[in-house]
Structures are given as C-alpha cells and as structure tokens.
Length: 292
Image 1 (cartoon, helix red, strand yellow):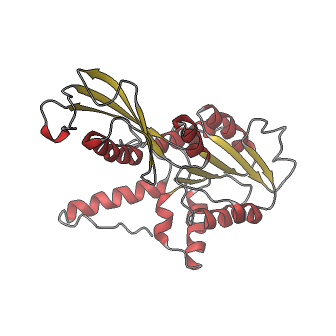
Image 2: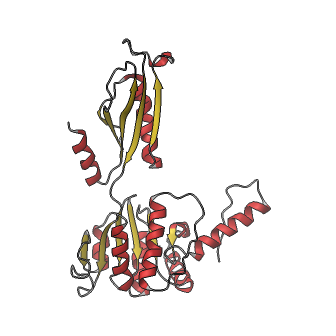
Image 3: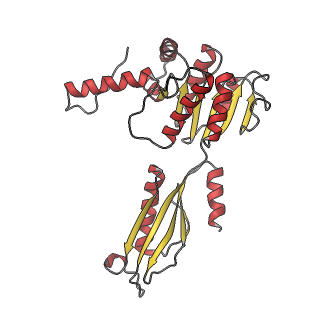
C-alpha cells in the first residue's frame, strides 16, 4: 500500500490524518531514518516507524495533532527508558516529526455579485477551493469565476439539498436579498461547516435571527455565525470587504487564539456580556450571556 497515495485519497475524501516521519537518528534503532507512518482519522495506520511502544505513543500523538492541526516533534531515548525495550540490541535516540494531513478548505459563496467576485479572487489566492452558487445564470458563470472549483447556477434550495458541508467547509452568504440570506442561513447553521458568515447590517441580522428562532431553530446555533461577516478593518468597497472576509476565514482556518477585531456585533456583545457576568459571579464559569 503506497503511503502517498493514501494521503491523496484521504484529502479527496475530505478526511483527516497525520504523518509521522523519523527525522533524526542517533545510535541504533529498530527502524531507519525517513521511515513514515500514516495515521488516519479512524485510527487505522499505513506504514510503520518500527512498532512497539514508540509507535503506540506516536499513534496517540498523531490523533492529537489531527485535532490541534499543529505539528509536533517527539524525541525517544531507547537506551535510558526501559519501557522502550524492543527485545533488540537498540540503544539509540530518535526524533519523530508528526504533521497533520488536512482536507482542502472548501469555501461556498452563496451569491455572485460584486462582493462575491472579489471574495472568490482573494480567497482562492489564500488557498481555498471556491464554489460559487447563485440562481442567476448571468452572474454564476465561468466567465465571471473562471478558476472556481465549481460554479452553480441553480435554485438555492436544490443546491443546498445536495451539499454536505463538513468541518473543513466555510460558508459565506452574500446574496442579493434578505429572503435568500435567511433560507440559506437556516440550512447553514444546521450543517457541520467550520465557519458561517453572513453580510448585512445589525438590524438585518437581528431580524433574520428572530424569524428563524420563531420557526423553532435553537438560538444557540447562531452563536457561531459571523454577522456582519469579516474582520473590522474599516472596509468599505467590495474589494476591501473581500479582504476583511478572507482575513477572518484564515484566522478560523489557522485557529488563531488571540482576540481579533470582529465586525460582528453579535460576537462583541456576547463576549462583553460574558466578561461582565464573570466579574459579578466569578465562581460560575458556565454563565451564558443572553442578548436582546
């Protein structure tokens, strides 16, 4: 079984994995430098780095690397630690680099207007596989989006019925009207998408959230919606808005932990409310803020 082919297959299937490679050897070890092992998201493996306790620990580290999406380097001293006794005459030290294998980041842009065409250009340059969806053939065309992964000119409901966004999917809603935004958001918040963003004012966002809540959709689902979409960099033009949105997409993809200048009033309000609540009752770490 070819390890590299297995990596390609994983990415094509939208799955995760991690590759462990012996990058440095000092002394005798039960394998060889550059030996590799692929750990898939279901726990199965391809290849080996020597077996035994070392491989078991690397397997566990690989699972953690998949979750954190950040590489790690592990060092094992086979001479000083008896638990690494392989029954062989081995007394060396080895360094193993474990790196995540992630599926391509898929960006679904609903709407094909001025913001969309600029977002497509910037996001594609940043490494996103872009799919553009609009119900107008004159807008959703290969002429306007020549390098998009897919351009779909079809009714939104039909498209949503066959799409299955996963944890590597990003959804940005920038259609021409509130009605379309609302029905796409209704679907989006119930998917496994990693990111959901919707363009629009605070008034529009409150109205759409309110209508969907009346339909029975849990308000908790809206906590992960970025609306207005993008980072607050003072963007005004469609080109600038596209940069602000892409910056937020990158921040989510790279799991940035520091505080960012979000445009979203919803996120700012929720954060400030939770901080105020924590100050008044620091013992209650699970306090949830409620917005009007």
